[in-house]
Image 1 (spheres, rainbow, N blue to C red):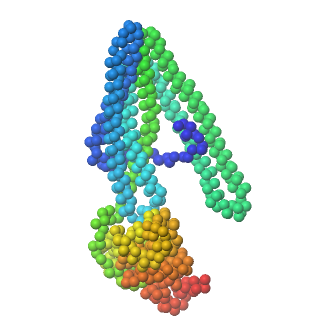
Image 2: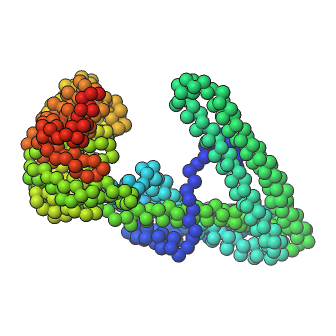
Length: 606
């Protein structure tokens, strides 16, 4: 195990941050204890059986010592004495200890699994109902770690660490008491040496692990060089930088060797310390005990008891440092999970029946003097006094340079964000007059970068209307110009699209997204650069599908390719977060020095 930690070839395990054991950290832990409340009876029995199994465990050295003493006396007297009775008692103690241990482990695991299942569900439910602002401030990997690593750490503590910590306390207290009862002189000798040696071994071991971790970090850096070089091998060769990369990698590996050799020296010293110090001390205690046997102060059986109890006490002392570190990690994990559970989520229910549409929309949308900046970047104004109206059934195009605020408008229509000033109206009513689910249930979006889930084509289309029939799915696919290409696959609608839809082309993914939107049958449709990254043929097919999708719906079209929005009822031109022009294509093209005309002519020339 020690070698595994110190070998530079081993991958570094993820180190969870530790938290100090304070009043606040214990309060956070207490918040999660409410999840254990339904299982408190079994947890209580688990603690009782832990106590009983540990007490039974502590009787084993005593009876083994008695067995040896009985055997010694039998040899002297040439009689069996009570060897059989002691042996049977010892077997009985082992059976009782095994019985208690079995149910203790069973109940602790059951409590841990059911408690963690409840915490996992609540954490996930909290995550998926948090606002988009929260996700803009967090990385997906960090959030995934809350669900996986942090909760697994808490699970391990409920299942193992907590019970083991209590067990070691009982073993330490009971073992020291038993040692004093066997021989106070030997106990004082042992306690004057062992605690200091164990503390030194723990400190020395931590120091070596730090050096080992540095070697692992340097090895990880060298692996990054290999990964970067191979990923960009064409650039390396094009710039004839093979020699530069070779020197860079060589220097990195030399640092790995440097730290590994430094660790090897300390590891060698650690082995010498363990051999000479710890085992030497054990030999000294046994030597002194043997002298006491010789002088008749204790028996051979009592010396055996003392040695076994010393092993128990030494193991308990040595294990405390690791168990304490695990508890610190658990408190750190608890703080991060509780922090997430305390986040303010959107008013959305995780029960499907409660999210049905209660207020139906006609499709009118009005932006009235909207001011907005992202909460994570309050100093940057994204929308400044934006006003425009989209009547039910109209096609409204929003155009402008990159970064003008076009996609932000789409996100506000979906109420991913709320304006700092101004009002967003649906059918003439303020947006907060409607529930979030009422609005989002009646809006569909076809984004530029379509994200498909890793299931089948049928499952991805049905995401627009959970529980849709096969006939509805096929009808939606036909309307999206997707049915023909789907049927070219051997598995048809059951074809797996791969992670993020990588097995499909960009045009195919777009048409799946359009089919999903058609199946949802929205009142309001948002097209966010839906054709900007497609080739001409794919764009034609997708554009035909979009025409079908936009029929009789209020459509918000965000586009860079201005040729796709010439037939829009109204074009809103935005620059630096402000509406600077509004009108149809012909009107805007008549404006001298107008931004829309400039952008159109620029694309035409290109």
